[in-house]
Amino acid sequence: MNMHGLEVIEIPGTQGYIVFTKQGLRIAQIWLGQDGQKMQDAITMGFICKALAKRWDIKAK
Image (tube, rainbow, N blue to C red; front, side, top):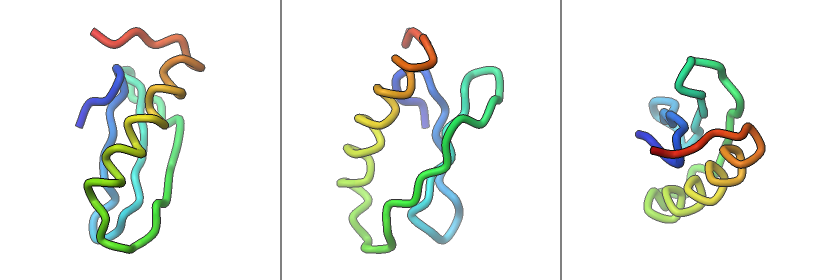
């Protein structure tokens, strides 16, 4: 999925996520716990990706 100009993939079978730039540079791996709260994870990942995009000076299109 795309969030704030970053690509986010879920690690299969977990609630872990890897965040990449559009160029394929891996900039974060995040574990949000295996509690089944996928909607809350999506909201949390939105905040995290917004901060990462700002830090890496990535403009969302």
